Amino acid sequence: MDALAQTKQGIGIAHGKVILIGEHAVVYNMPAIALPFTAATVSVSIQPCTGESYIDSAYYTGPLASSEQLNHLHQMIQAVCTYLETSADGLYFTIDSSLPAERGVGSSAAVASATLRALCDYFDAELDEASFTHFVSISENMVHGQASGIDTEVIFQQSPIYFTKDQPPETLDLQLSGYLITADTGVTGSTKEAVADIQQLLIDYPTKTLEAIQQLGQLANQAKEVILSGNIKQLGQILSNSHLQLKQLTVSSPELDQLVFTALQAGALGAKLTGSGRGGCMIALAATEAEAQQIADALQQAGATQTWINSLGDSTDDNLY
Ligand code: PMV
Image (tube, rainbow, N blue to C red):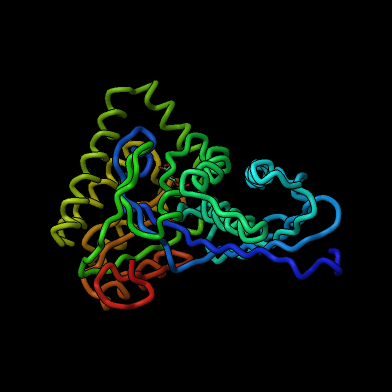
């Protein structure tokens, strides 16, 4: 790195997301609800360096342009630099993340968002919402195959959202007396593969697949209503029903089913996979913090590699959505 030019720096931070309901169906214009996942953070810093741009991360360290794994990020950075009429060389990116990657909690969108915020900070640029989501979607479309944009939007809004593709999101005021447990199976899932497989299912079994997608959309609308009326018990049932529809779409896995079963046995009001599935994370609802802790303990005993508990209620706690 060029020691002389080290005063200039850019920093960007982003959190991940949890899809409460409606994943996959959201790709087909059904509504979905997503929450920021504030328990984990991605931070990206940029410092000047000589020569071509370089990236330092847990998954890849080396010249930015040579990384196949991070090509989606490279493409986004190129596009941003072209837009800002500046060179995409001479940037040293350092990515620090406590968000598990490829686990359905929005790591790719969070890394792209934090990188974009760091670029804006570094070049003293401001982007409006449309430009922000446009640039992040360059990366997300490469990662997801056919991204709905929900991950980018909730990370941008930093608030719970009710989202339908290509429509402005509605922010939701979550005032539920309850807790959300998120648990990681420890198995990586591929969003691109899962999204492509559902596309194929629609060709092979159109009626059944479309029915499951529409059911998921209806469940998301019901979830919105019960959130607004504050009925956490009904929300739990709706989440469990949506897990069954996601199973129909072949995006669950034995590990996810096992954790969903364990959570329900341990007293959860409802449980489902979250994100693209086939591994990754699941979520469960609990009425009290003590019950949430019991469920989290049971999930860890059943093999979850990590669990997080977030309040959905009206306390002033940091983990509040
Ligand atoms: O990449 P994930 O696991 O956070 O899932 C994203 C949500 C999907 O609905 C599966 C895809 C999309 O673009 O909406």
